Length: 208
Image (tube, rainbow, N blue to C red; front, side, top):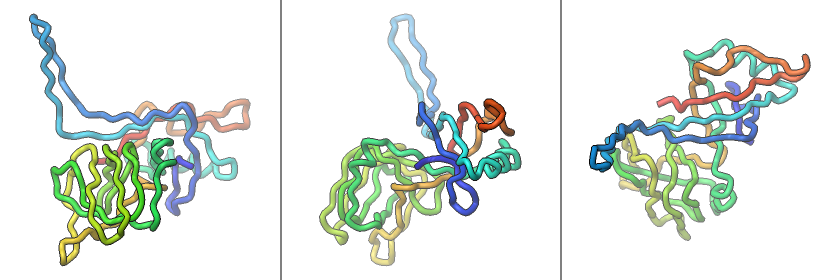
């Protein structure tokens, strides 16, 4: 279940549908008189989530405190929503996916056993950045090394061990990240029928 977590990684509010995970990659597009199109894009990218939020009934006050005290100036932690089809196809024979990679590359080298579907979201240690896999990856041997292709390109190097083998533990299922609450979102509480706390649609922005 995806939603907002407290400091103990406990779910205090779940995301509701409709839910949108949007890739924000700034670009400038212009058309010449010949109607030829020119596009310039920034190398940076972030994910933005737009969704309804439903407090867990027993922890509604936790959500209010989290949103009011942190507001727009501090990050909150969420469990990042996965592509439903991709996560259904995820088949890891062992829980660990070990990786290493070089900054600027569009892939990481991984050791695992099982199947990782394209369209899966993945996160690496010592970074809050979320990446999306762009190709299916299969490995039958935990000792073998296979590429996992990602988008966007890796923003920081993931070192290997002394033998230059993957050692950093990647997260896929139940991945949590820090996000900012967008400035248009409510920082308090809204009640529907005087009983049910209804936050409406909120936007969460990946903290880079």
